[in-house]
Image 1 (cartoon, helix red, strand yellow):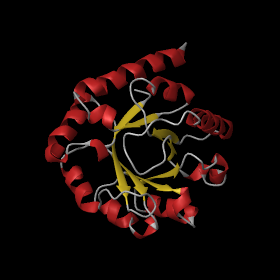
Image 2 (tube, one colour):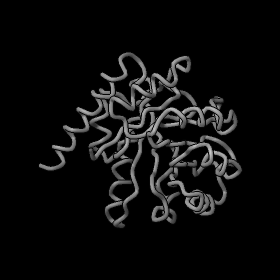
Image 3 (cartoon, helix red, strand yellow):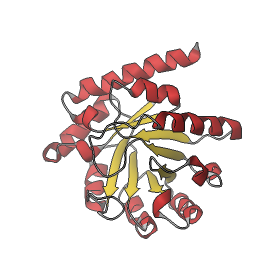
Image 4 (cartoon, helix red, strand yellow):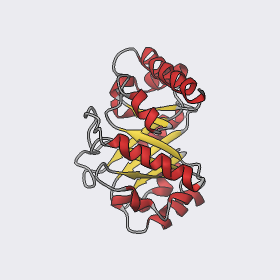
Length: 225
């Protein structure tokens, strides 16, 4: 499928971690999104390498690790060795972005860069050709269950236009406030990967994942017309 779902385990029932991950994998999710928060770059504290290792042990899905932390360069190797397949850092949290992106790739992982809602795309002008993924935050990072920021749609469209103009192939991932009611708008704007937490893990996981897949299929057919 052209479009992919990356369920965020921030919303998982940790008492049933392995079972819920098995459910999203069986239902057809493409990635698992792993939100790491340090209590400094964002207000909340989430989890780190031990939980990532536990997740790695119970799934074959690629692990999409989103570092919402200061000084992420200190932990790249630890996260890679704990099972990360894709490591995304925030442009707002680093001084030497090119060095970090290069370092992630040298570790054998795919490299992503994330932008907060108020951060302009021009911050990525000289790194876009080096990244595998750009993550557009459609809420202010730090908490699950927030409402989607509508202005994010214009930012996604502009990023897609830049990708096409420059002949690049990075994925566009969008994270924050996305559910079945607005996923189609986000895909139409240019997203390739949708991150969803409560809208996947709240209720019937299989039914929720299949709901996203139906939207992806409709958007794929629409794009071929």
